[in-house]
Image (cartoon, rainbow, N blue to C red):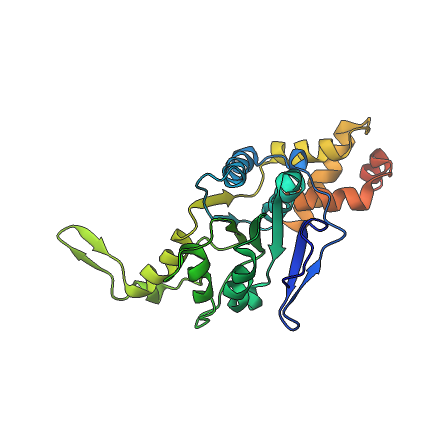
Length: 264
């Protein structure tokens, strides 16, 4: 791991079995300008990343919310937009989080600035591996490294499953709510991410704007919108992912024929 060439490669995936980094040679080409309908979230993550690269205080980021709304793509786009300014990224699977302190030990003295990327982060009931995050997020006896941030995506706001029984033990004392220990533990983990960005399903106009961007040369906008709307309805969600899947299936087709003949 110590001999990994960060001048040549800007991204790597941690392979726990071999305790090695595998270079990512074919990165997802998504660019920040490709992400539509999430301008607020994008601006916040860009600002945080730029502060990090400038050596200013910056926050770990949790991108949470509905599936297919661009959370993972945004992190990948940040790497594509800023690797030439020294940003490097290591993807760590959720099941390999126990190795985070080991990984950090090997990069904390390097000149580059690293984002540890954990996609689809979440923990099951009784899973204690999330505790490995804490030393990276806030340090322990040793302060967390100045050149490392964690960017994670999740469908859960608090990362851990929440149940009605968690409220057992909550109490009201002189008008002040005292949460149960179960709730406190679950909230405390998410609170360690100073930047929390929420992602929601797109409305119709936002969804069609993405579709229009993917089909800039389509002459029949009405047919395009009808076909794209039907496609999203069948899948039960409007999202950037849905728009991309629609493009993959129907780019190059005559969409007025698609609509007329009921191919969808």
